[in-house]
Image 1 (cartoon, rainbow, N blue to C red):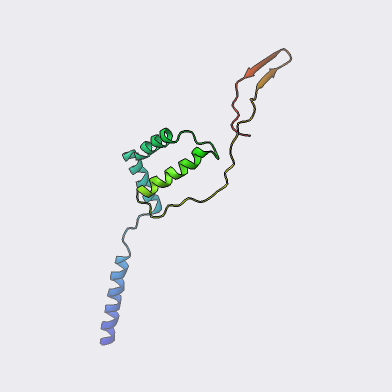
Image 2: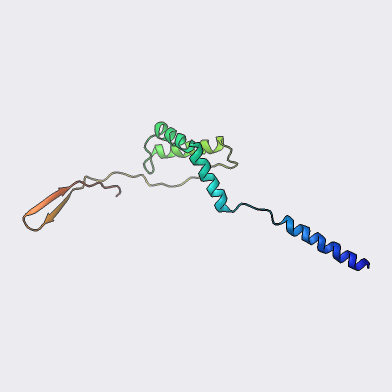
Length: 122
């Protein structure tokens, strides 16, 4: 009889623990959706973007402004409660605009048309 009581209590305990495990833990997708909805509703990101663009300005690859922008972002993260914020040294090549490029389209032997182009790398 005591053995039967022990088995019943054990099964009852396992049943309760199984129900306890059934709590709804949010999925990563749910958390991401909540983050997006909060960002869209509060619009803080747009205020940060405005501050970044007006305070630091253009941030070409490898420029001093790009370094300032990294420090700006680290300060924003730390001010908003990020538990770990650090900057790592990294080699970033400095972009230099190349010479002016021109493009002319030749349509047959009698007609050519100059086109405006923009070269973004090089």
